[in-house]
Length: 98
Image (cartoon, rainbow, N blue to C red; front, side, top):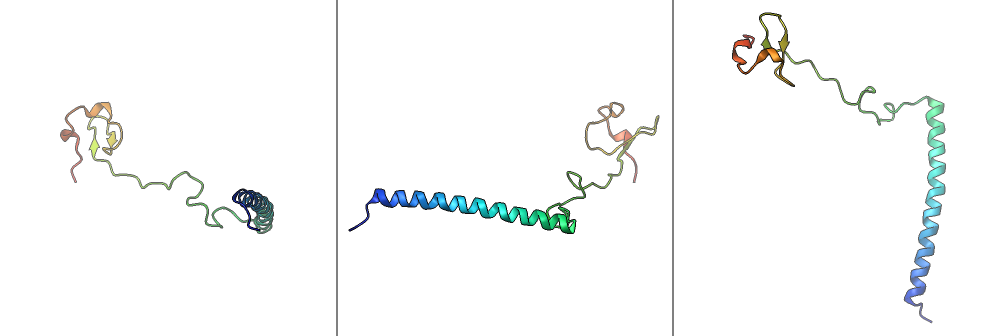
């Protein structure tokens, strides 16, 4: 006798539930084993290739050379970020000669 559509769907649902339960059990076992090895060998995220930096959010950037200097105070500005008040609208007179 042929199996009906509804019976096949019910079988599929039952099998999918069994698959999910088996995966959850096995994943829990794998995680426990991995944690045990990490502890045993004192591994870090960097050792495992999971950390891209040395704990900071992003790699440190090299400092930028200043482009502008205030002749009165000696204060400098790289030209990046918010402009200091002393620079005003005319930046040419504050340019550092190269």
